[in-house]
Length: 135
Figure 1 (tube, helix red, strand yellow):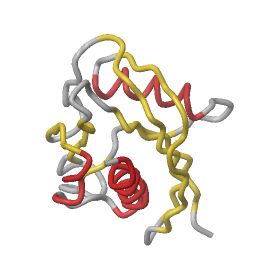
Figure 2 (spheres, helix red, strand yellow):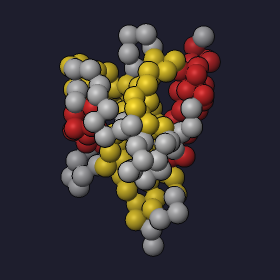
Figure 3 (tube, helix red, strand yellow):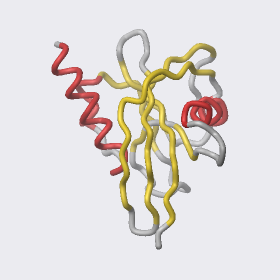
């Protein structure tokens, strides 16, 4: 039986309505795929608390978490990921790529111009759909 991993990821939007995208480095699984930054939810931790901790560790900044915009389960070859994508805003600091190869701010309508990790794609589609509906 494959292990299911609970993961919280941040959909961080800046003042220009761009979304922060993080490129997985070559020493991570799924290298050179883009993702929403975040990480594993520890036992007894809420997705929101986990996300604030992970963003502090990964990007060296503090965030405020808001609503969950997408919850999705994706099965990879060796494990299953249960992903909570949470809308977030930076309240302190500037994101630094401590673990990722690169960070990129991208307009919502251009999110499909990069290659995403499969688990993140439903959230990308939802964000782009919401953008199309509101314009």
